Length: 173
Image 1 (cartoon, rainbow, N blue to C red):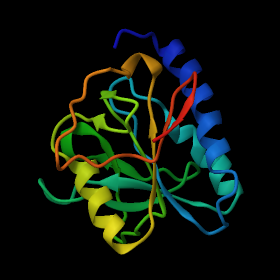
Image 2: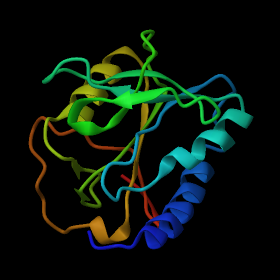
Image 3: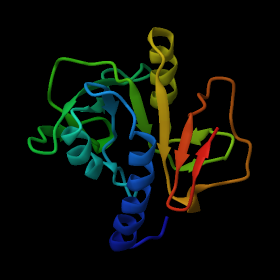
Image 4: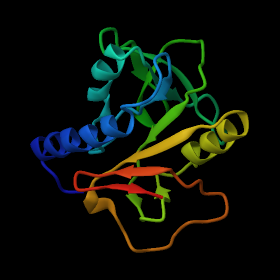
């Protein structure tokens, strides 16, 4: 993706507004898994301050073991205790994991059927699958409209997201 940092930030702000609209009715004390932006992904960390004001606990994922689901740990925009983790992505240093009620996922591409392509490893798919067995989890994909593709790339192990928020539209899948 060939976007300047200023464009990434501008479009991220528009996407974050759409995400907040989707989350406007969630109960206090809910937990929401964010992601640390990798490369030029949507910067959803900016949501943390607004969510924390609503008494929603923000979490960030951590790779514990390759080929296993992600685990989520507390994150606060006020005290972002992070270190470089798997693939050089920043991860929380906490040791107490929490299962999120909502997950916001990233992607390198998506289709409007609700499937996403990440950067390999299948971490989000395994995580969504495992958490769906434990609870009624809702998933939101935060992506740029330019990442949309008509290609039907999904495979049997891919997990569909519930919503896709781009700078132009919110898709319900």
